[in-house]
Image 1 (cartoon, one colour):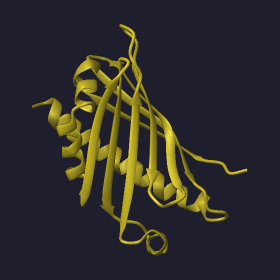
Image 2 (image 1 turned 90 degrees about the horizontal axis):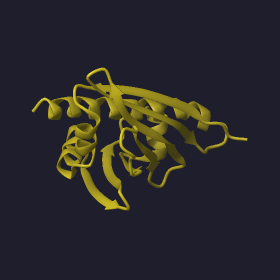
Image 3 (image 1 turned 90 degrees about the vertical axis):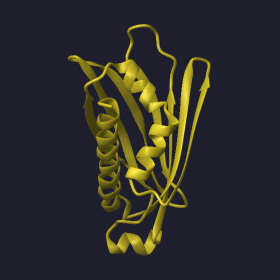
Image 4 (image 1 turned 120 degrees about the vertical axis):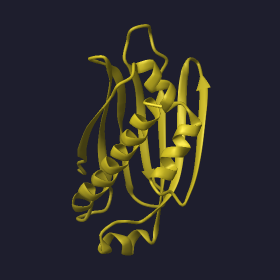
Length: 166
């Protein structure tokens, strides 16, 4: 049985959850994050339905990975990220299911993202399972994939704080 590596990341913002959620659903801000992560090519779609929102981001990035991995993935990596935000009931934290896939590779992360009040601001919590479905090598590659996801979340957090402070 294949196991997964758990990822748990937290970002705090000096804005209320509604403002942070509105930013997460802003296509222009999402495109800014793509540029900040050095995407060579990207697309962003934001679709509302039944009180929820689905945000899909596809990014083509330079493969900044250790050489043994680069020989498997090539010079570029295409990452497809889908956040499916459920409708919220007044006062409840915002919640999204997250699915991150690396195109044409057996690597993924599935999990959740939560936005909830924290002090005078908002706490974003991302919890997920990173999986690389390659016998024998997968468990050694999962920390590298998790490291890349953490770096992307940190860059997104930097962009978010800059956006929220105007």
